[in-house]
Amino acid sequence: MLIYLNGKLVKRQDARVSVFDHGLLYGDGVFEGIRTYGGLIFKCKEHVDRLYKSAHAITLKIPLTKQALQQAMVTTLKANEITDGYLRVVVTRGVGDLGLDPRNCPKPTVFIIADKIHLYPKEVYAKGLKIVTVATRRNIAEAINPRIKSLNYLNNILGKIEATNAGVPEAVMLDQNGFVTEGTGDNIFIVKDKALVTPPISVGILNGITRAAVLGLAPKAGFKAREEMLTRFDLYTAEEMFLTGTAAEIVPVVMMDNRVLGTGSVGAKTLKLTQEFRKLTKKDGVRYVV
Ligand code: PMP
Image 1 (tube, protein in one colour):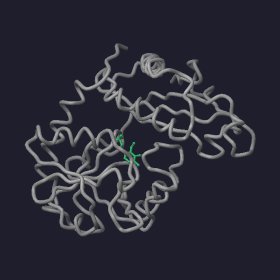
Image 2 (image 1 turned 90 degrees about the horizontal axis):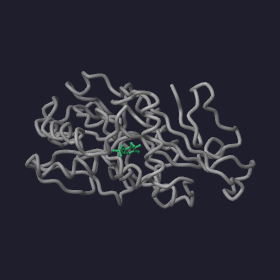
Image 3 (image 1 turned 60 degrees about the vertical axis):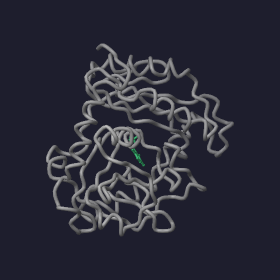
Image 4 (image 1 turned 180 degrees about the vertical axis):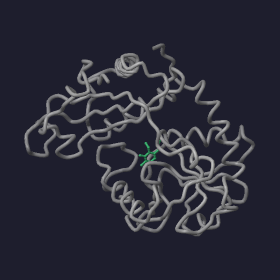
């Protein structure tokens, strides 16, 4: 495996960053996870734009143009002969001293990993996922805005630990007021009175690219879609539920907090959207040839 690291392709075992890198010392950095389908970087522009926005929000200047970064992504995919896979693009504040001050980090660290990805087994997509709501609240946007896809994932990891302790792979996190936010690594949708409903970005969630794609596909699939503040009541009484994310794609959820949701099997609207999403993954992005 070859890793792109600060402008060079290096072997996996040589892809090392300093212990003084503030990405490691303080989680001071941003990242993206991007899928490729049959030689197409899915939603490439959206991911690159979000990365630059995340960086800008933490006053981190990525030392490449968007075009150059996209080229580096393609170079890494080609070097690893990956047509269907996953890119992890990471930009950290770079190497500094032990103080917090970002001004002591003159050069951001940029690396790109191109790999294969299998998040959930096939049967999860056929039978649906079991999840739980957890006590750990999503951090408030006024502290660390979840719109910044930063290297600070401890809030999500604490939620994930609670989920795995409860014997399920994913959690839904609520905000300080008990409103539904998102999963630890995915956005959430329900079907309510036959319409697709998802919490608004303003509740304090990542502006998910898969979420936006699903909202865009809804009319095509013949469904109404809207953003609305949701509580656990809405989730328990949902007709269908699914999670969306780059790695997870569209995952049906059939049980939450040990309660059966809807019919207890994968919903018809979830299936229809999944079909439409599959079509989109074949055309919406930037092509490359390995
Ligand atoms: N929320 C969180 C916290 C995430 O980490 C992710 C995965 N990046 C998502 C939502 C889904 O976002 P996307 O569809 O852009 O991958």
